Picture 1 (cartoon, protein in one colour):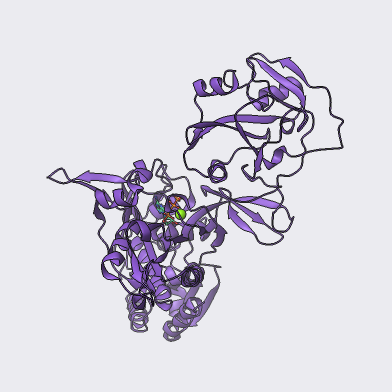
Picture 2: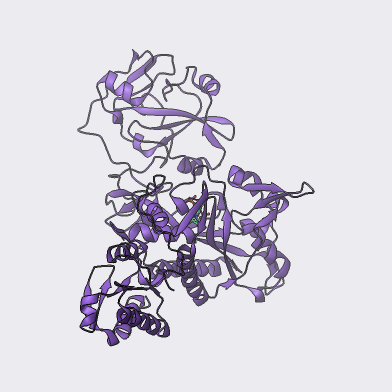
Length: 572
Ligand code: ATP
Ligand code: MG
């Protein structure tokens, strides 16, 4: 590609709306253009990178027998009603109507459609297993689109769905896909950590997310340095770090007047004690009934875990009227002493002595509360948010909490969709059985942003060779020197013939501008034809990654560059 024929709209200034490096660089280096909130064009450079990621995905999925198809984005509402997910997806789903006022949705994911295909076309065990995938635009009406293509309303996803005859087969497919994901991200030059994850609206019984560690990540990940346990904080199991000092003798319980003091911090200041001395009591409703949820004052309730512990998704903080009816006091004064409703407590409550808690009476707290003396032991469950310093349940090591961006996720779905959407088959004995499913997603456009997030410096993007939009920039420094320009063109042509993707910067621009743009765009290799060294018959080959430079005779340059490029693309 000649630079003057291409489209390289680089910007000097950091775009104001972009907070993180990948978003800034994708705009500045001319990879994406915003249309409106969460909607982006992939400019020619951006599209090339997307296509490279897609090619790696296709190769690796092909290696484990997955087959590509393409399903409609526009889907009738009814099929989502049938699976029960029309309501569950809620506002996240983009909706529209046709001229006959028939309702459609723009697909956020494709379990319904693929399961329908299998229900219509598969009837025998002989046709299984099947593992389908597609690479396609998805729509989600995200509440807060942000960070460019990291969280967009329209984005490119690879989504895959597997159908096995039994659980054993499904487990094997899951493992194959998990391993394929590890290879895909590695080949993209990305360090992605697999972590245990919640199954959310997908349903199912086991899941892993592939996370790229980054301060800007919206997910928390608990990682144990001791044994390598890693899980999304939404479900990370933990043993809360003990806050008890020496053994205290239980004191006499008594009420204290605490007018208008409700939050743990206000109360801790008032009682001149630490938050971990409090039993926080929150009133929730679960399936319509009030439940008191207890945890230590320095712990927060994790609602994902709470829903699992209560075995229902229908869990919400109670309204003031319900709270008053359940506790006899206005909001802010609930506590376990004398409370008559169902109580569930986080593990952090274990062993707490002489605690402070609400008295179920307006403007009143009780001190020196001890279990079981003052209230009956409630149900216990791990329902707190994991914190750095908590103990690992697997090895008693210490957990650390880091931020991450989810680039992919794999799920074991079981038979949830195959039963509701009738994806059944006849087994060897002629018995009708539901197929056992899995589903597997990769955010292709988000992956590109994540790669940049991990591979950049103050001058721009530092692409891993395998997914750079072009591998080499040929930079003739003087466009006035005919011999130099013709040597540069010769070199460029030779590279093309060797199958190397090169751009020749044929602009009448200064060396400084050519270098700056090349580094911003992130070409892994620069071949520089400077007037002085060219006179001596040499060119300079400079690597973007580490700035390492070699001077080689002009006629050897093409082969040398090819070797450098291929070395870095080596199969992992
Ligand atoms: P998130 O928790 O980030 O909203 P998700 O878990 O809902 O994502 P999945 O349904 O697992 O997403 O989709 C598969 C992949 O698609 C994700 O791992 C992620 O990489 C990507 N993805 C999801 N939502 C978006 C989005 N709004 N913009 C860009 N990529 C997305
Ligand atoms: Mg996910």
